[in-house]
Length: 211
Image (cartoon, rainbow, N blue to C red; front, side):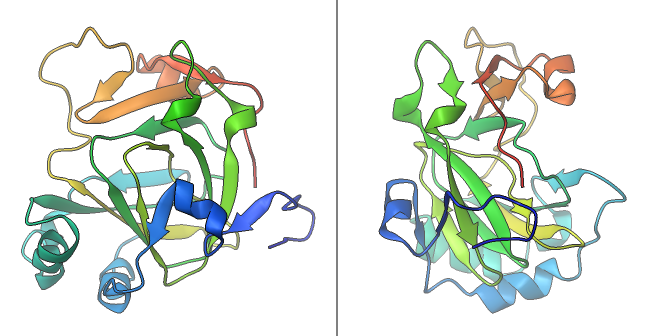
């Protein structure tokens, strides 16, 4: 995929075999149901908004379907991330897969946990993937990721499904410098002001990919 004025020469399609090292396209996921919910969510004025567990979705039928068919009966949280960011400020991973459903075209920048050395991930290990609107993807727990980047205005809308409790505040400080929130290990870039000011581990080095 290419966009006028941007370099997409190294962006793979999510349908390519190369994505299989990072995740899986969920062709059987009820994407229309998810997008119908997403379309009712608001866009922020600027930057991104992330709601880990959207209260209005706690009782929707989709939640039960996802728990039954994609998480082996384990409890999950349905949230969303909407916004406009066009630069990768960090990389995170969780214990357990993450499912994202896109209501707009987007680019994901991904890396592998096996590429981490001495609590650092170099930007040369990052790969980009184009994910079209209406696609549901599973990101494996060994995949480093963050919010997608939109291709077109006015930004992106993405449903984020994770094991219940993920991204909640920590109840006590951990000895692990990477543990930023519950079930969220984070490598922040030194130029990511918000992460750095909140005490995130600076472990993402090199040039930040941009869209």
